[in-house]
Length: 460
Image (cartoon, rainbow, N blue to C red; front, side):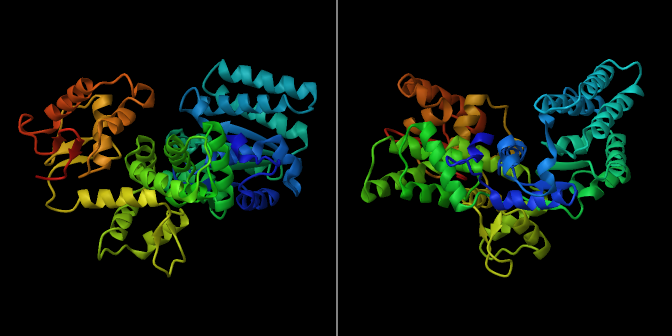
């Protein structure tokens, strides 16, 4: 959330990162911000557009008008959908500015023509009329900030990007673009027409890193306040060590740790005991697993293979792919040093995946990208949501016992801790066994340890 980027003293997180982007904008160059899933791209871009942030910046961009465009709000993934959203966001932004009434009327008229066009030809024509009326009438630079831009670039008609490039060429000193994507723009689409738009960002791509320790510590304190718990300095260090400054993992780790700490202050010995328990819970936490799956799903096959090689004894990864992983901040350390995974949680996730795909290993497998479940190489019957949550918990703790409290928390949630009884859990386990066991009456993979809990094993 954008307000989390603001510290209690009014300063902003990611100051160094913001300065990189502002240097491009001060030079009137478009900029592409790239980052893995939930690294904080949206919060970062929203921060750039906050009036209080704009008041603190320096350089030519200080006088610019930033228009935040969340592409998830498009009514349709096509030219009209994008054009409508841009003019809608532009109107919302200008309502907060002092602008001539004639300009506002011209923009509104163009917008109404765009949403009720006389013909398909009038869709881009109305958009251009509305945007150029603003660019001609404001006398100030407009920075179009496109968030969640991946699907837009990959799937919207190529003529849209040719039009955006033409508008940028016409208004070189008053129109600048910023995009946020999970992957670099050239890898999202191969199209000569679209390439002309991508050229605007070729030398101005910035890979957003995880939060630095100071910024992460401030975020962790904010999350502690929201959770109504107390985190000591040792707690903050623990969360950063496991989450690595990844915002999604930081939030998940704070939730797990907060459920153990509560509000009272603790001494070092108590913190050590709590951290040991949290370290056991974190890898099997559904929110943690979900964040790791999202990161994994956003990587290509070469990047995945390289990461798997790094966590496999004797494995080696190609240098070009290693460089890419360093650029994406998935690997830390100098490129000529022994690389390390940016987060202990993601490192454990990779180690688990590596163990499960080694040749000759039988058993239950979960494709973390598609959610497909196979047993001994054969797909299972589709799992219900509760069945999949249970399997994901056990899969995350392969070979380890999960007690009934862990099952309830992961499958139903903490609010159901006192309402889900043993019989209900056992019925769910039985339903899952029926789908993953060759012989459910003689289970090989999902075993019950009476009085202790349940365990998923990789192979018989």
